[in-house]
Length: 329
Image 1 (tube, one colour):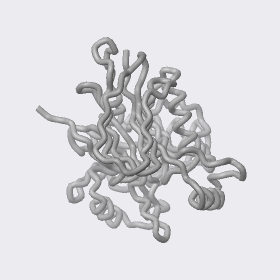
Image 2: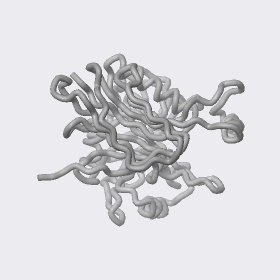
Image 3: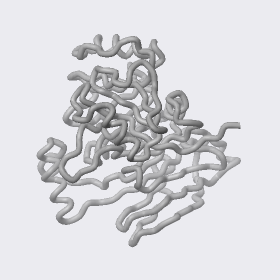
């Protein structure tokens, strides 16, 4: 009997086939050195790996494309697309035609950074019925927090779109290491594309800051994020966390209520909590942190330079890790 395992990867990557600076083979080696299990290569309007997935030193390399135009960006993941490149879409009708084509070829559709102020999603989300949504794009910034708030509001409305992250890697800048920041973990049977996409489609996902960042394992019995439990049979969740850094806060939400909070005044390792679930709906967890002093001022200056922060906007609590929800019915 096959068993599921937590596998780590990056869902949004670029090479020299669009506007990245690494050749495909260079990027594949970087993914291997990061010890990732899988990666989707999503060059703008171009399929890089070719018609089918490949395995590079144990890393599953999956075909994809970021359909990119002035109305937003959307990833399509899959294989046997029969096209290597597409024209840049400019109208809603052109977006619809492209997404429908790739979906007819079995593609998984994931809307990217829908609230990014530099390039938000300007089309009707419901009309595209995405299989997932990228709520955390590139290193943490204000727009990611706003996107998480929006996604949480959808959950409160009873709408679940599985949430993923993507580094949107193009290049490193000076001392930064942006590949797999964030990292998406999936609870899958293997690192084949079919199994990884099945896990994402089911919401069996958590996202964290990097491959070495805190991992959040939220379970209820044998149920994982994206799955449902009868509240009368299970009234607690188990949350395991590798570690919390000093100054980070672990929060657990049951619908609109915060039912558990843990602030780390020092580094804490090997955490495990049994948390009662008061009411039906959903439960999810996340780790947050706040920038202070020079770090906060430095962020505001740098983010303003890249049009990700407005004067006087303030810096919210950033996210370090989060889970998709477990549902209680």
